[in-house]
Image (tube, rainbow, N blue to C red; front, side, top):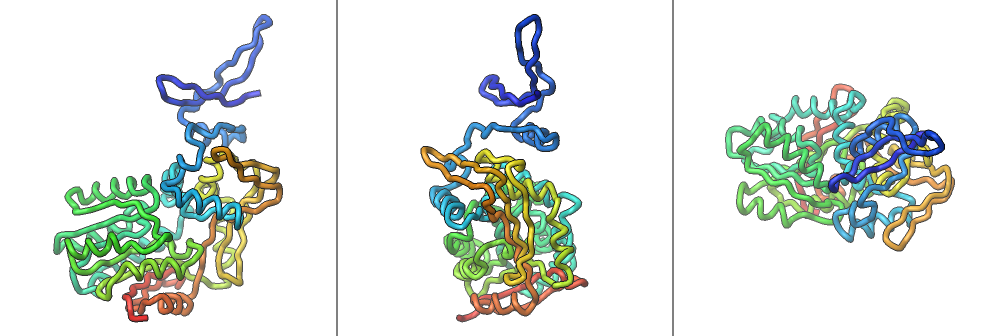
Length: 372
């Protein structure tokens, strides 16, 4: 029976698919295929349903997360709510997986938003009416910010990318500077769910232009567990001269099955939201994905259902996952225009412009802070 082994050559790990063979009474391991790096070996094993049991050289909490606070948040969420916040799926190899997802044919959301930005970016910038610093919150690849930067050529541009994932920031930096090599830019790692980021926005206004335009695109608002808290964090990072542009998916009860169809059976998406569990030793063969629409909360919910008892080890401690437990890996809120307008108003914003797709399934919402 074939199995995977790892080799360490001059400090570098690589993997092979081997089988045990007998020859004249002696047994040895025969190499069937060289699998290369850990990522390529995992991908081969997943496609061919072969057990990959290695956790990698840094299978520990501190090796995965960026801070002790994130470690505590992860452990508390998993033990206390059977949940892994989606933001953690973008760490480490999650950045590569997410990049594969957004460039896949099935990622319609990104195409829809990109086309909407192309149509209205100039109009949005005209609405702002002054020179601004462009802040890309949850920047992703930076490709959507490029669409705004292209239309800001009349003055010296200042661009700041903010994201929780260092690897995603590297993607954004590569894409942005490839197109604008002399751009005055910064790429900073922050977790905007933890609190405001006025320590970034205020110096920007002092050293560059007196107003900021914050891009909050990709339905990122719909993927956080507490939208009010996140909007409050953003509001506390802004002055009355600043603007916020939100990109969010809209909902029609008739489209429920179409929306669920984007997720069910989508292997690239499944790989993305499984990043953290895989890092700590689980495989997708240890359970199955369950995707449902919660009508009461108007959101898609994706869970991984454990088929047999498992353990996550970190240091001398363990998190036990029992058979039948459902771990919430993703929520994606889908709203209607009236509800999102109420939400932004309750968190200290006034809507200046509301840009809709022809099918009214996606919106760009330009907001300004107002007095509470």
